Image 1 (cartoon, each protein chain N blue to C red):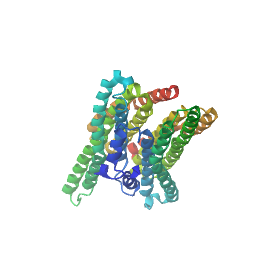
Image 2: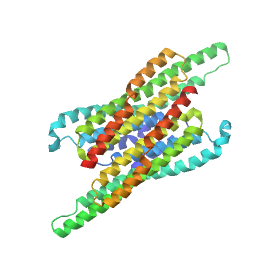
Image 3: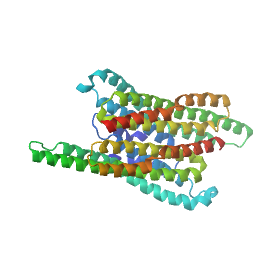
Image 4: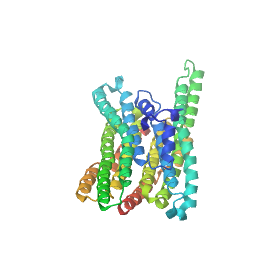
Length: 210
Length: 210
């Protein structure tokens, strides 16, 4: 599992001349860092006398952010697995018409499965962004910058995952499938930048006036 | 060194109830992932017959991206070190006026040093973004999405580092110092979003028409 590799090894493999791990895994790592930073803000808010009023809320956010972190950490590997399945399908024999048809069908099926990984990543990152907002608004102001980094990381991860959805849908011939998946993506992507800008502004204002 | 820790351990420590590692280290990791992805695009372009014309350019980009990756990887730890120096200064004795004055001076000095880490991170991420642009424009179109993820990661890292500059300057009393450092930051931050949007659009259009 990539998550058990050192950061240095992961970076070296990302930089190397193999297609995996690539941007899909990097997106999952960014999303997981975003979720982890939300958890950190919660952990540094819970139990503090000055934040007793928001403690129940921060406990709820923490439960959710840790769940999302677990899912995103799993996606670091899922992206590699999905890519390998697509490559395996492309590697199928194509000597007869029957083999060609079987290969084409396998490629299309693998591409559809591969679309689901970045789409799920994008949806989970959208949820991380919502939690980062609560952490930025209510969490310990001493670590509000970490809530800001959380939303930046989750938003970059969401948009990175979106690019990986486009990679796949561009090669999928089933247009009804593509319309459905791109609509699901647009649901979480549409206001991501303005949402992030809003939290960034809030965090910056808290830092400057603090 | 944090870079030798597993991704899982880093994420667990990020999420935990210690202030370090925090958003500053996460920013350095994001920036390093951005640089690594630029390198990957170069590595998958160099030596390809269809890209012979851009080979010299991609070799130059690769040399620079690997240098920036090395610097950003070092910054993962620098952020923790700078924070610990600030905390050590806050922990100095304050029983007499003399001790108080010495402590205040030490805090201010540590904060100034601590400002330099995220400011350097922001500047290096700005350079990664320029390289990601060249990789997106000229690199192997089969991995153009990775150039897109590179610019998203580097931009999120730059803005994250900016928040960590504000954390420090808000507590620094030397306004001339703050003006100078914030001007340096604005130089790299000013057009970061529109620059990133431009590359994101380019990458998306190449993916859809590819």
